[in-house]
Image 1: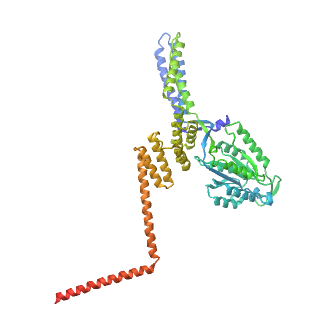
Image 2 (image 1 turned 60 degrees about the vertical axis):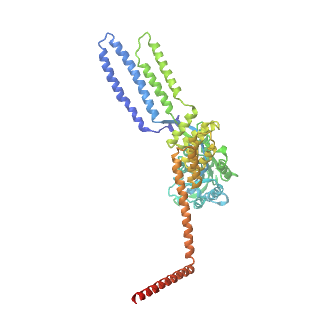
Image 3 (image 1 turned 120 degrees about the vertical axis):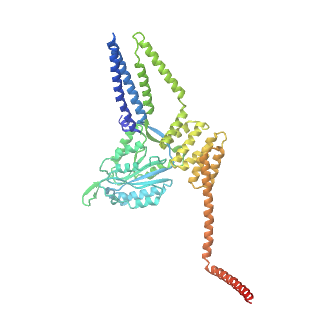
Length: 549
């Protein structure tokens, strides 16, 4: 019950104000009842009729108010409760959370190293062999700080690891929980990558927020691995003030107990299998456990499917009750005679329910079409993770050659394209085989068009133009394909012009690199021009002499 209340959310809270409309409606009903009561008071059985009318009017008003409130709650898109949905993940991102509190300066690590120095060696080795992952770095001391956002630059990570020190942060104390929460807040909302958190610590915290942050990570579906450094025998160090002497040790038992409690509480809820665990850095194969956790999701098709926890939208639940209350309001509003009241009420209720069932039967669509529509609506609202889950579920459930499977795969590729996951979108489009003439022309044209878009993002305008041509041949009404074909051809012409200009600049540079040849050419031109002007002057002088004579 606590988890259900914790996951309560309202997507459109402004619609809830519409529920206030029931107050003027109730006031209108009261005024109307007063008028009717005065009109029937003069009759013989006026009191009895008035009392019966009041009962049914109150009942009808209550049912209609309940129907209106249910409709308002449905339109406001209230969500409560949680469920796991399958999500296709491509690639991985590893958050390195470094505990840089002063307790990490204790020199009880193997080979007389400080705990922080041991972390530097350990983390550098992990970064060196994680080739297919991106990285993020978080510093944890009295607070959590994202030092390096998601990047594939190993040198940036290695430089940070090499310079780890308690002096990088001014906040006092040690808070592993805030470090984990900083990592969770840095995860993009629509990321298609699998996320992992590695915490390098001695487990000595001052605010006891670790358990709470691990439960939060479990709700996000993010595995957390706590890697312990140091000895379990206490050692005395100097605190951050430079004066106070305190004792510190690797709190392995404390961390293990917290991990056990988190996994135990999650095993009975929807957040089970959260993969929260503690690893002692001195244990043989500890690094391999971390690497195996990340690498098992790289390059294997059967492990690219993961799960995310999302709130359950209760739209259909409240719509159902709105309709039920509305039907009950019509039934209760009838005034029946004593003899046939029950029979007539049953008859009217049955007729309403039959009509409602027939309406549902005539307007309902198949489950596959419903899933496609739900996914498209989620995509339209920008909820790409939810749309991906719906399309992926339909693609796995439907037959490979069915039209529902084709549309699910196409919509899945379009969703990846919207998320910027070009490679994943291209792989899905390649499964469709748009050259198959049995597919609808609009479908084939759209597949060609999206492939062209992916190629333009890669600056491959030549092949993109070919796919836009195929899109036009498949469906001549595809105006966007015509526009993009023209743009690709302009880009190709511009590239050719730039190439020719570069060649001309190269020739000019060659001329400038041979000044002696240039001087000889200029001297030759000057000599020829001189001779030309001399001949012209001599001919003019001869003509002048003839005229003078």
